[in-house]
Each structure stands twice: as structure tokens, then as C-alpha cells.
Length: 216
Length: 86
Length: 106
Image (cartoon, rainbow over all chains, first blue to last red):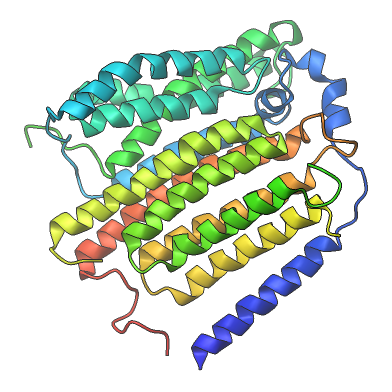
């Protein structure tokens, strides 16, 4: 009985949602003209990066905080995990040797090119996370043996971002208001720190629990 | 992106919805996870087709790679802790 | 003839429905998580399909929804990772992957 009730609910949900979405007004109200108007003042020429790191940088600040928060939650709840044992798997070694340098290069490339073309800190950080996860799976994760350095890299993004958001308020500007001539440099600094933090946070989330120190 | 539903639009969306259905309704959770990774890659294609290139890069790296890998690692831990088939 | 934007909206509604179906009907916690991810992706698809450039499409879509969806993807990954540690801990505590003893919702 409840099986058919659920199916009926889902069917009516689908029909109702489709009708509601199809009846959305088809007006041409968009925010892209407003973004294009202020694009030169934002310091970058990629509109998505401008929105992410300048016009709505508060959202990005909170997004990086959410990354750290998820990690804190995972470390609080997950079972302590040791670093995986070193794997001498031949295909993995070949993959690591072939792919790790282009991955690092690609991450740096996305960081730099995000100012003018699709890319940015998060894309670079996610790709670097892929490389770090490969290292982790192969048992070659030296950062897990240096917990202080590991924690420093994890909080680097949020710290730099917070510093650069609070700094303008000391010189009379508003919170999060970059000085317009230096907006590009500030965005680059924030993005670099965020890339490192995003990569290491995603890798730490992959581990699934607090890294257990080897002598416990 | 033509006036009517273009052939590529119809094909992409049909395969997308089909993969999403396979990602939740397959018989075995491992198969569901693999279908979910395919779903993530198809989403990346859809983003690229719609012109949202930043999203395509992010979805390909994170949606398919990290999320799928997370599911696979968790499944592996389940298999290791017990001999049961999930 | 359905326009291509309407096709995307219907596909987004289908993804949301599939996600809800998984959350409601699957006793297995992992399938529920997969359903939540599918649901989230459906909503992202809706956001971007509404954000098409109004003229003919040689410009890129509206950047503000793109930024929102990018943030959404990050938050979805974080939530999924945290939920998976919860599932792992739950399984360690109770030994099963369903919320109740029995396997169906009576």
C-alpha cells in the first residue's frame, strides 16, 4: 500500500514541479548586464570569478568556512584513521609519475587563468585534491606525519581570507571592500590560499576521520 | 541550443535522467555508485553544453571524482569490517 | 514543439523527483545519500537552465547563478563527506545500514 502511495506522490511531485517550472515568467530579467557594467572595477575579466571573489565574496568566505566546518565535523565523528600503507602497485606508480606533475601544473594554471577565462581557485583546488587523493591512496602522504603543518595548510585559506576582509575596515573602508586599484592582487592572494586549503580539506575529508598519530 | 528541443538536448537529458535513475535503483550499491559517477560526468557535459564552463570543470573534478571516490572508499570500509554484501 | 529550455526544466523536475523517490523509498542509507546528491544536481540544473542568456546563445549564461551553483557544488561535497562519516559511525555502532530493524516502511 505505502509503495503505491509513494509512487503516486512522486508522480504528482513530478507533474506539479514540471507545471510550476514551465509556468515561470519568461522575462529577460538577468543580472549579467549589472555584472558587465562593474566588471572593469572588479579586477578580473571573468564574470564568474568577479561575482565569486568580489561582488559576492562574502558567500565564498562562508563557503570556505563550510569546508572547514565539514572537516571539523568529520574529525569529531569519524573513527581515527591511520595513513594508508605504502602501496608499491605498479599501475599506481606509473599513474603518479605521469599525472602528478600535470595535475600540479594544471591547478596552478586554473588559479592564474581564472581571472580571464573559466577557471579559478575552486577548480584548481579540486584538481589538486585529485592528485593528493592519488598520493593518499598510494600511501605516500607525508603531510599526515606532520600534523602541525597539515593543520596550518588546512586553515590557511580561511585565515588569509578573513585577514583580507577585516583589513579594509582598519583604513576606513567597509568590511570586505578591496581597494579598487589592488583588487586583482587581493583576489589572487585569496585564491592562492583558498586553493591550498580546498585541496587539503577535500583530501582530509577523503580520509574520513582524524589522522591518528603513528605513536598512539 | 536551438529553437526547438535540439537533438543533442533531448539525447543528453534523456541519458542524464536514465543514469540518475540507475544511480538510485540498481540492485547493488556498488553499481549505484558507478552509475552516480557517470551521472556526474554527464552533468559536467550538460554544464559545458549550456555554456557554464566553470561549472563543467568543477563538476567533473568534484562531482564525479571526489564524491564518487568518497562513496567507493566508504563501501570498501564496509566490506572490510564485515564480510557482508551491502 | 517544446522549446529546449522547457526540456531542461522538465529534466530538472525529473531529477528532483528521482532524488525524492530515493530518499523516501530506499531503506539503505547509501542510496538515500545518492538520492540527496541527485536531488541537489537537479536543483542546480534548474538554476542554470533558467540563467540562459536572453538573446541567442553565444554569450555565456548569467554569472550570478553560476557562482551560486559553484558554491552549491562545494557545499554538497562537504555535506556528502560528512554524511558518509556519519553513516560509517552508525554502521560501527549498530552494524546495519538501515534506519530501522525491518527493511520496509510499514
